[in-house]
Length: 134
Image (cartoon, rainbow, N blue to C red):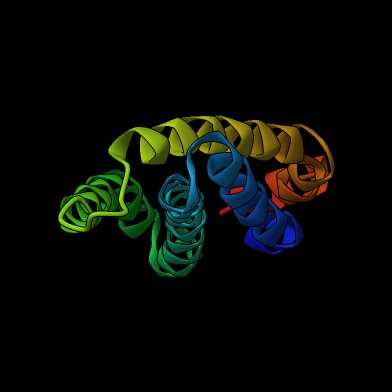
């Protein structure tokens, strides 16, 4: 899913920068662009860590899904705390960029799972029966 989203990420970061710059200047533009970039990096980290954990076991996958969310959220808060020390940084612009970017990314994920990617993930009846037979 990460590969499917990659073409949309640079234009989204650029769009956030342009809208932020028009709305409030360069600092707001950079804050918005950084916010969208953080969302993108979070998505990539989540996808790669889940893919790696899925190769290990279902328990590892579940642990990464639950613990990884908290760890990545902590990193995002730490990045925001560090950035807040810079004069150009606007926490409001950062937040106003992060929320819609996250919602759009979740919508993209849902569309992918409901569409072509979901069909790739489903098991056909023959595979299900073969796995159930000891």
